[in-house]
Length: 424
Image (cartoon, rainbow, N blue to C red; front, side):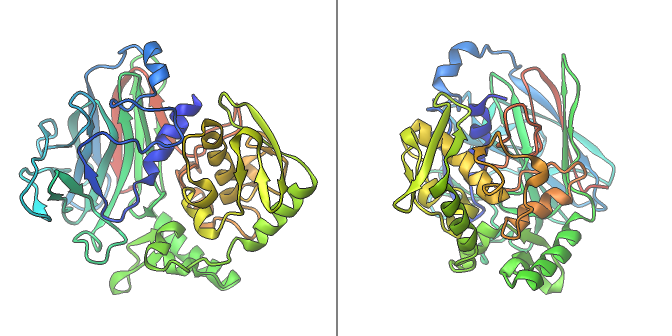
């Protein structure tokens, strides 16, 4: 998989579930990918990406829950309409472009809840090309999307206690469908709740499948997070959101800081001390898997110095869990932007003491084995039917020739994109 596509889909994880507003003007959320044009593709690759995909794509939505009151919602930015924010209406095929309302918190002007029918039912829908797409699922009730002037869309939030969806049971998958391909994944970067699975059937290749989380995955994570909190005294149990005493979802460590900025304080300090000590005495080599190639460096004056990528300060817990602050904030330096995903992934997986070459010296069997690690990500992988799941913003970083651990599907000749909700 091309590195720009890995980083492109990684940046979709940055839309934190905080009820953020999405303006209709084109934006560049994909900071570590090459420069984007308003159709969401890397400028230098457009000349080699022929319009191989059809203008629309067939999507099958399967109700594998025990509820007859389940719905799907499809949102994204229309690549053929100036990246305007769009919904698919309840009929599963009509595109709806919201108008700018006169006041904040206005309701949508159209019904965008696609009924999934009875358990075992499959609904067929059709989508146009779009970037930053999401297919949302809700069980036992509908979701509420609101409009602000702009128009700007207020998406459902799991961290805003006043959001109308905070006590609803919902999840989503992410995708981009453009002239090059369909690229999709199931995201656990913000939270874990309902099992979602997906498959992609191609016109000229094998069907790709990501089976998703086991039906007992959420309960298993709840129990394991409580056990981990007892072992190390850290707030892993605080990730559990349980209104009325019944676990509804598990938040990511990064989202826990939304309500408590000091939740993790010095959690990573001991590990960072060991990493900084190690690379004060030996070289670190980061393979950018991009034009910058291998970058070699050492810790000097308490900063990791990595040639053309610049200097990296010691990361805090917030920096590591978010993958986007402090030394991991992206900018205009292409080499640095390529290093950040590899370093951030090595920290979250706690592999920096195992080798001196990243990511190519790391092995999946060594991920999350150190006591100080991203236990949320560790547990997410443990409850997936095949071990693959997108657990933090750069979980798609793999060694050259390595196997996907994030659970992505992608194809330049997609025929049918199938998603299921419920895990049954």
